[in-house]
Length: 435
Image (cartoon, rainbow, N blue to C red; front, side, top):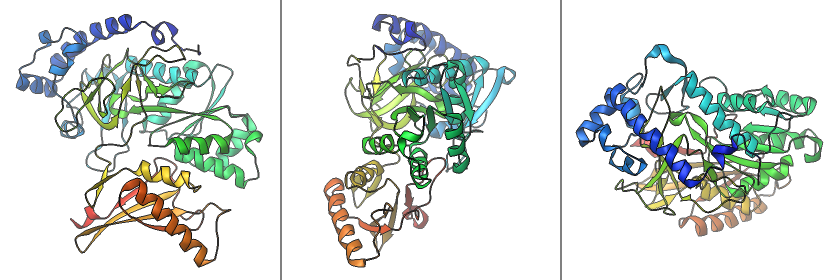
């Protein structure tokens, strides 16, 4: 049995969780119908009223919300309460179209921070820990969520934000940080930088890392764990549902427990919208059960994953989601083949390369091209052209086996792929610029 922040909820019986969800969904649908004209219109068009929703089983009657709806309703169209009741906004780091702006009442922030506190305690955090938060602060939800969660647990919180790696390392070593919160790509970079500064993993006091905000593979987890001498935990969330802490890993590390007292999860067929049975692979859909300011119902995340209710050794009873297997909108279709960046990362780490890479997709003479720039680790680098070419050919063969199509691999010198202090930019799709 593990440690819990709110044991009575985290280990509640299935019946108790359903009772909480059923009570909350009835109230929430009424709240949204009466306060969010945008969603009321969608319900009216579908012929659904709040009286039709008597339990979570009826959620499937409700219309979906998508990112397109959020953009259309920007900025205030999905607000569920008077603006005077809101105390904060957060916003996505989205690169296309209008940004998504999410609103929070103080109650919303308290519940969100509770969710993040559960994640920190699940990773072994207590009031004796020093929690270094290097997610971005400001509009991005990462910094704010883990910062608030760390306070609730009673950790000494280092609000570092992202970047300035020399200072990150100085504070980490001088103040004895024990928990690191950041993106996995930045954790890998900190590990690299510590090694370059002459530190071994045993020189730091870190015991755990809580990493999210971008996809990462099991191979990358092992690589980070080795470079920092820690146990690395996954955390998941979206600005649209509050931020990180929608779900989190426990010590079993076989998926992330969804905080089911706050979020109801469904898996749907991304093409038809049909709800799929437990254990099916499909698109993850979330309903916020008790958000006041920005109460999204049936929000399509575009993340592809599987839910499981298999009993967990940590004692938590909330449903688990697997690590997202890609996004239905991040999937690259190259020469008719579905390619996810995570597949490329798996090959690189299996073959002993760093997770520093960039995928460049283009279209030449009406045919898609796939180039992958892969960084040598410092100890692999060779000036001999023949060595490099044979390694590139070997990687191209491994990629072809994994992806079903042959990319062109370019091995590049250490540190030549741009490092990200926020979310890593892994894909440059030039086809979009030409089309």
